[in-house]
Length: 198
Image (cartoon, rainbow, N blue to C red; front, side, top):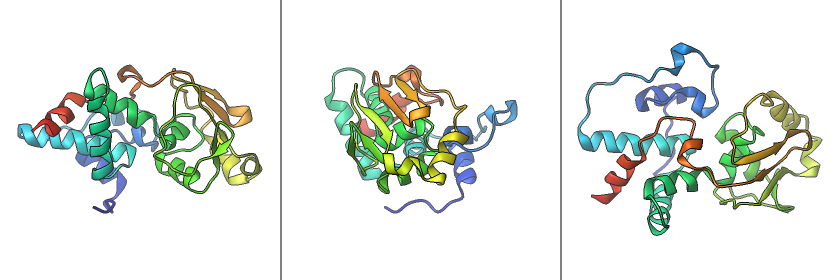
């Protein structure tokens, strides 16, 4: 399955996602409201929730299903485990540390070798970080005006509680794993579990 070529804002509207979650637009009462859609079947609601989360993190079906299976094997609630795994992706952590405006930009930064984890270059966006990992922009990339501008532009974005950011040094540390309360968008992960449980 290839990537969706549907315009981002149109896709957000179809899935009931606030574009702010994707790193686009400014906060206003108007765009904080969820899009009201006509009533869907139980299956349609479950499918929509899965598609929404997949779209937010930029993950394709096969990989998403792999994450679900990984989450099901862990102790605890499968749905919450799934969200923790998705938040632990390196591209998402780079986005959460405000080194990039969107997860797509963060994915590009990682793929192009601008990011190091514990002093070693990692160019795999799906790399899963662990507690204690230090994520930073590569020394040679810090002098790039493009990278500098990206970090400076996003400097006012709040850092989640599970991360420590040192924006002056273009680095951050994973102090804990993300939990459901750290998620900044409305999600009903139980619907995703129900979808895969059929």
